[in-house]
Amino acid sequence: MNAVVANRKYKYVYVHQRGWKVHSNRVANIVERAIHIAEQFIDTQSPAIQYVCQEQIRKTTFSWFDTYAGAGQAMEDEPEHFTPVSINILERKHTNYLGNKLKLAQSFQEKNIKSHIPVTHFSTEEALAYGESDRVLFVKNSVGTRGEGVSCIRSKQLPEFELPKNYIIQEAVSNLMLFDERKMVLRYYILIYNKCIYIQRKGVAIVHGPKYDADSIDYKVQVQHNGPDVVKDSYPLSDLPQYGYFFNKIIEATKAISPVFEKARQQSSLFRFILIGADGLPCTDDCVRVLEFNTYPNMVNNKQEDPVYAPVLSSVLLLTVAGINDNSWVKLE
Image (tube, rainbow, N blue to C red; front, top):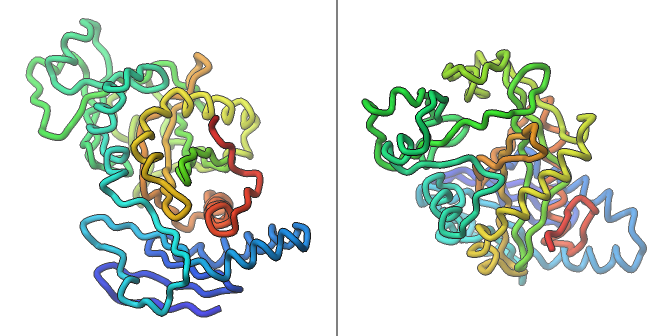
């Protein structure tokens, strides 16, 4: 294995291991393990399939760079790392609308998508007109991630509330399916590649620490699941007794909202992809409601979540570089 870390505006790692050539500045800590898992899968295939896969791997460079804030793809300065085939993430101009909560909500509205998503308002006036009952509302920064820029208010506060620019208001989902009386968010993965949309079988259930109270506007109860003093549990989705049920509902929800991916899907190719981390709320009415997308999902070392991340990246490598599905991707038809 040969790993080179270069100092640019953002650090990245170049891993050349067993023929694989991978650049990354987001998940460098799991690249080597992902390659090892991919090789183990290829070793179970017939000699003919192994040969084809290894030929694809030999001539391909895979790059996954978070280009946020104009960081660019720094490895372009080092062409010796490249091979005849280069597979890269889609340019942000084709995917930013998915990661921006305001633009995403507008896209849902334009495509008349109403099911499997929370009700969203673009102004205080819209929220006031929605109903007179006192209810919990989420105020969200359109570009915030990991709970940043999110607060909760009650609808009775709306007459005196001024919605900041680039924020939205979302109605709270009232019929949540709880885990041990706590709020649960399902993180699952969508791959858009070569004009196709795939859903990954592996994912994570993130369970908030405090006991859930639907009427609460406490940030710790409704939103917070990150930080040094936060108590939370995370489980691979496959470890949950309801895994089969949850995964079927994830597929159902993703199909319902799939028109919103059309712009990114049309821009994808054999050489361009995007992996999306989707957050959904399982509900008691047999529905998963999709809250938001992360177009550069964070995959950091965590003892509870780690069994998911390396296999997910391995599956991405196998499909895009080796041209083989390890049976963890379900293609939306």
